[in-house]
Image 1 (cartoon, rainbow, N blue to C red):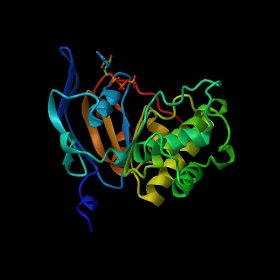
Image 2 (tube, protein in one colour):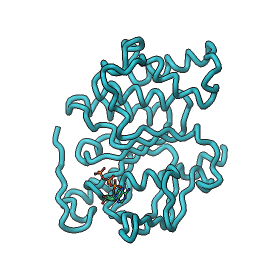
Image 3 (cartoon, rainbow, N blue to C red):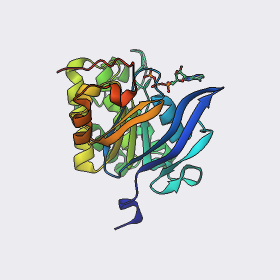
Image 4 (cartoon, protein in one colour):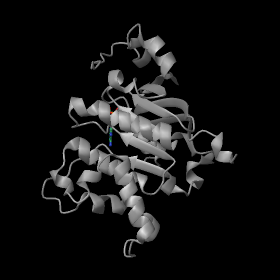
Length: 255
Ligand SMILES: Nc1ncnc2c1ncn2[C@@H]1O[C@H](COP(=O)(O)OP(=O)(O)OP(=O)(O)O)[C@@H](O)[C@H]1O
C-alpha cells in the first residue's frame, strides 16, 4: 500500500483567515479522509468559498496549515491530482463557440501542452470522461446550448480527464433545476464509490446532499460540526442551530 492510501486527502490545521480586521474563518481543523465524499455546508457568507480558496492556495490564511495527501500546500506540486469546478463554471452564454468535446479536452492541456496534438490515448480519455458524466449523446453540441446541469457535468468531465484523486466542487448545483439535482448527486456518488475519487462538495443544500455524501462539515466562521453522515443525521434531528451556531435560519430542501 502506498503512503497515500492512509493519509488524509486534505488536512486543515488551525486555519484562520481575515479580510482586513474581519475574521471570516476561525481556527478550522478538519480532515477529508482519502476516499470520502464530503459535503461542506453553511449559510450565506459563512466562509465556504474563502475556505476553498485557502485550500487551493488562492488565498493565504494568516495562520494555520493545509496539506494534501500528507504534503504541506507550499511544497505540493502534483496539482493535476486536484480537480476544481468553480461556482461560476456554468455561466457560458449560448454563443460560446466550443463543443463539449473541445471543452473537456482543455482539461488535458496542462499535461500535453496547449499546442501539442492530442494522440489516440488522449482522445479515448476525453470520450471516457464524457461517458462517465453521462454526456456521450452531446459530444459535438455547443456548450452554450446545454442546460446549467448539463454544463456542470461537462466541467466535471474536464476536471476528470487528468485523473485527479480529489475533486472540489463549489456550489455545482446553482442554476440546476430541482429534478436534476438528485441525478447530479447520484453521479457524484458513483464517481466516489466506483472510481474511488475523493470529493469535497460545497453546497447550501443540506437536505438533499446528506442522502449522498459519506461525511459532512458545517461551517459558520468556525466549524460547528464535522463527522460521518450517520452522526450528522443524529445531530441534525434536533434542528440545525447546533451545527451553525445560534440565530441561523437554514432552509431544508425536501424531495
Ligand atoms: N474579497 C473580499 N473582501 C472582503 N470581504 C470578503 C471578500 N470576499 C468575501 N468576503 C466576506 O467574507 C465572508 C465570507 O464569504 P464567503 O464568500 O467565503 O462565504 P460563502 O459561505 O462562500 O457564501 P455564499 O454561500 O453566499 O457563497 C462574507 O461575509 C463576505 O462578505
